[in-house]
Length: 327
Image (cartoon, rainbow, N blue to C red; front, side, top):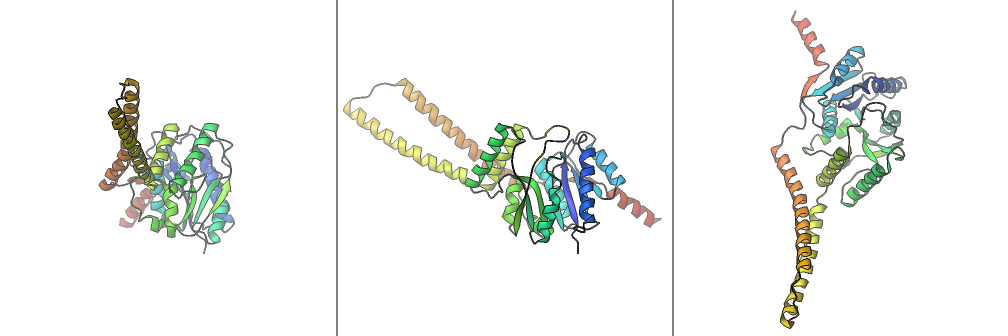
């Protein structure tokens, strides 16, 4: 039996790029159907993440134009990770496999065929991994690679150079639905589910149109979320550093007492200020890291919904069908 595929495509203010990439997604879907690798009932699911432009109107137009296009609209902007989650949870009961991919056309759409092939070979998760970062600036390449290495050293199980381009089976999604975190970092959470997995390598292209929605500030926030969501080692490092500073302070106290007894004490304003500033800075950094973890606990305890769907493209058809039946 051929698997039913749902492409999960988060969209935020993509009115410039959507008319271009939607045709590319449809072409790839039809190609996989023609090769008998997926079911004809496969769909392209756009997730409108509270866009302020005409993105949702375009999605509705596409759904009327071709039955393979469907869409859901979030009640407000919740961020990329929540949009991907909303699409996966919407598809988990109707699809056999899902492939999440960004709308901007940077990820190689043709890699989907290799992902589906790996699924047919028995893999439940297939990660799309960048083969190189030649299109990135030196700064972005350096910071991204440093982040992946740092997070792995801190205990986070993430695939190197993998973002959110991946195939996930319905079996994995149903288990993943039991993960109730409000603070989402999908590329680190999916590996925690387990099951057989592999990687497909591809080259990433320049954005086809529009502007990137991930400036440096958002990338840094995502990186910090990833570290604090997957690892408690920063807290342990703080504890270890505190012990080290305490040991040095104890030695300093002994030295001060001995110097006083020997009568060699000299008033030193500069040394005092340096020590106070150093210790004050360290304490503020440590409090900031602890505060980040406490803030995450606060959000998790509230258990607010991670996404709210305000509209679905197929609901209009269902309402029309109900009216016909009532007549």
